[in-house]
Image 1 (cartoon, rainbow, N blue to C red):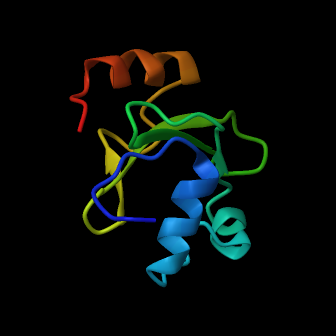
Image 2 (cartoon, helix red, strand yellow):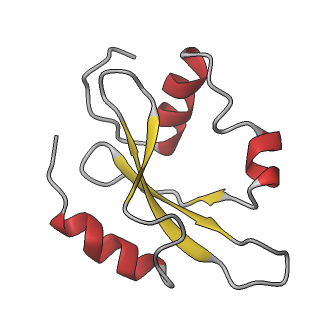
Image 3 (cartoon, helix red, strand yellow):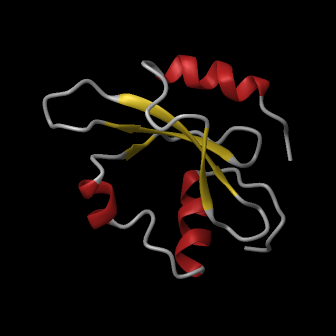
Length: 98
């Protein structure tokens, strides 16, 4: 995948991050942080994850962004800052497109 291009699938984001040598999406990392990746990419670079601190806690949602130049993953706003994925989507609507 060329850098500085938008992404249209989580699969493409995962592959780009893996190609850079990152373990961000590894099964071990996902389990360690009780993290799940929702399936949609917004505006070519944003996506949403859900996490919970303890196994019996409610899931909270975090906006993530893949840097189109470096393929690093950044957290946008507060980690676990949304109670629903719909709230996270509304916030993404306010974020700039690449």
